[in-house]
Image 1 (spheres, helix red, strand yellow):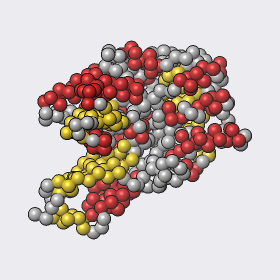
Image 2 (cartoon, protein in one colour):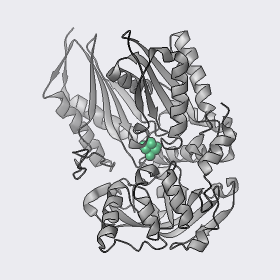
Image 3 (cartoon, chains in turn brown, green):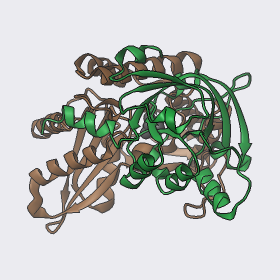
Image 4 (cartoon, chains in turn yellow, cyan):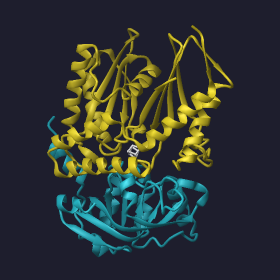
Length: 282
Length: 193
Ligand code: SF4
């Protein structure tokens, strides 16, 4: 049945999610940090995770952003095909939610209007980056992520050769995480998309890091690949903060997509320890 | 924060900038330095402007000799607060500017992540060090900051140059004057591939 949804509800939801993301590290990532603190064998690595746990607690209780880079606003919006949005246009409504949260909660405005002139900040952290999907049903799912620059800079897409195979993918992930070192603020979550095409792989790798840290991939073969990649990533030695250790990543999340016979795209998206994504269904 | 003293792989030093070449040449990769006093913030945009001022012979926003530069773009301070969240940003982005600043007297830079070969070489030649703070621990670090004032490039917002007063701000020495690199040492110790 077709349902009407006023656009103000989207604005309010975005503002609320952006606020929560800045101050409240999600429980799944907190539990992962605690587990990693126990498993880490490097004393300095343990200490780094301990500080991050204290930091998360302080951010939650004192309402100070957990990280000074409060990110670019990324939204994944799943619109039920039986929803009729009323009262205005969606892009404006989403940006208004971002604007409100970043202003009211003293979050950092980190967006340059022009990427090569770099002379004018948009002043309100807009525009948001928005990915829309049309899905069955009459609900709207809003997933908000605050993405910092440090880990975004450590993300990549590689058009590999089909001959590189799955072993090539493993090597690519290991080399990439090693070279990223402490830059993306480990412990990290690594999102990998194998297949699709150039742009889909990047998008799906990004979306993969939004999965709950402790979930299992429904496909047992991919779940096993995730386990193997996590083990390999944690053998790089990067460790918490990049200071060396056994706990570099909390999880590796893999998405596998059909691809063209001539291509083998692989994307790696890195989520830093400020794992800020929140969702709501309207 | 003082817990870091017990876990330090090396020694723990207390330091109040400006720092001398003699002082920082005692620091080794893995040591902890507790900074108290005045440090300056600068990120990409401010570095670009400061380097241009040095090249043009203009007046600089702060004295570079002995200075400690912290790579940070804090969140805005809430009313009644000194500063917002203030953790380190990634240091390699400042690599193109660091040689000239080091030659001009900067003794310590603080950020996160590794530095390039050229920076490491310049640090060694000019007796300066690079240190890391914990990336992501921004709310916690802000508690060690007791005063903050924008002293240049106000129009840059988060990227403006600020004079910070810090109290016992713990940083870990990554690159010392002997050319050691804590990240390389740490990674090779735990690498199992
Ligand atoms: S990479 Fe993440 S944790 Fe590190 S500074 Fe950027 S936003 Fe913060």
